[in-house]
Image (cartoon, rainbow, N blue to C red):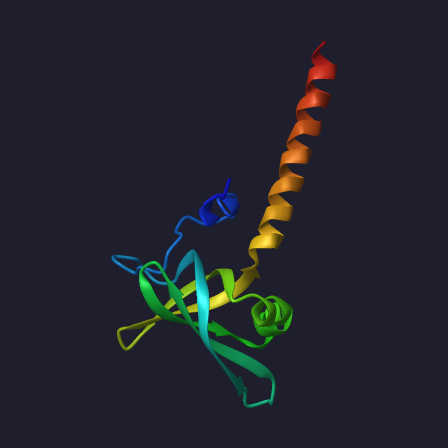
Length: 133
């Protein structure tokens, strides 16, 4: 059966799953799953690539900002997956909220990680069972 995409990133180390911004203190770290609507490349003053993406999640649209290091680390996933999961820090400026992205995950990547975590848990449980018997 199909699983909710949320079930794939429950283990990620943060507490919020959507970019709705009601009552947060800033900076606030969140995870948001969304669809990339537009991508805009820009250069920094020292001519490094960075990217701005318009994202849409269940609460609406927001801008995701990839500074050079984050862009370089995540460019393959950004370019090859229209639907991505972002972990980052909310940034509030002039009543506009953007997400400063730290990490990007694709659904296949999270499925793989979840499978590996389950296998590791089973191994640990088996080991514990053999130790106590």
